[in-house]
Image (tube, rainbow, N blue to C red):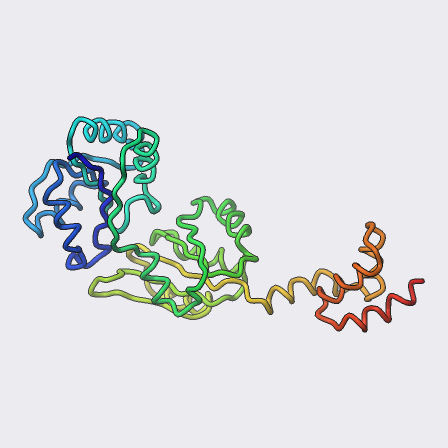
Length: 280
């Protein structure tokens, strides 16, 4: 029976290939991959000989249809990326979407993903996180994108290329301020490395060396204390009475205004209520 498999491959160490992945690659009629040279190294390591089909960014629309035509004609095809889970920051998502549109079952195998390894290794909060992926290459657009995530409380995860990682760290520092980060490279390989600390501390480690390898940057979310400081800075120039008047003049009842101002300032409601009496 023909099938379409989405197959994760090792993110560095070739020994991380699972038994099930090995079985699927051995039984597939054809393997679709980003770079045939990279995939050939993996297949040669396990003595697998299969026809390869180039599936990469810029040809994914047409080749997706070709792959799905072959599946419908009876072939079993495995899609792999150069490393990790296809569909995460690569064109595999296009094939999955088109397969679903055509009613073709998609079988996704579990396996390595660099973002999870980096997150767990970071020592930062893992209870909630947002995967951003690659930011825009343009300097201004990159900072504009980061601005959308500045007030998020959860941990943030980004991918970045070696020639852009320093600018991205500087952009994080400019937009987010001095937060804790973890910068991971060469995951699961012999020279796996994690730089942990503030953004400035991590930047310092690259003063005298050139970044090499693909990077995963994990960034601490905005703390509740920082959020409170942000809120306070918006009304630091206002007295409590002026703050109350802002809401009342916009149509809010005095009772509700007292509650909102007390919450924003982190003050007992009684104290704000006393100030409100002078407005009568």
